[in-house]
Image: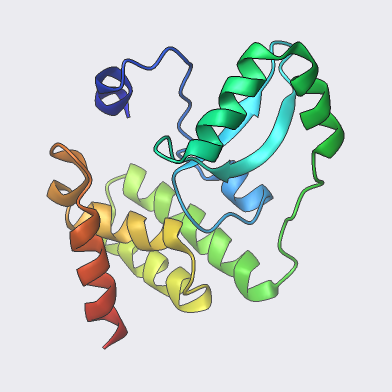
Length: 160
């Protein structure tokens, strides 16, 4: 994350949810996502798709930073957790977590097997997709820019 943060000359704190805790809690299926936390440490906006080339996203962030009343507006509109109650999704999340632990202790093959089982249970979960791809093809994720064209082609290949 650091190289991209530095390249963007970002002046905000970046946190990496390497254990996908917010992803599980909010039933998120894609990355990257943003979370807005105010100076008091309160989450004022549920996780959202962060795209800094999107004008609406930029406007929202600018309003939040420049308008002291906007924080209160965001807090009022904060939605409750959207944690999945679907047993398949719950199992997929557990297998994803197990895969992370296995990878951390050097058991890459076992981790990949758990992630593939997780993906079979929750096939629209892009977090799982991208984790598998990033481990199998780190050059498409960590050597310069993320190769989104390759990801799109990879997805088409997997569909067949």
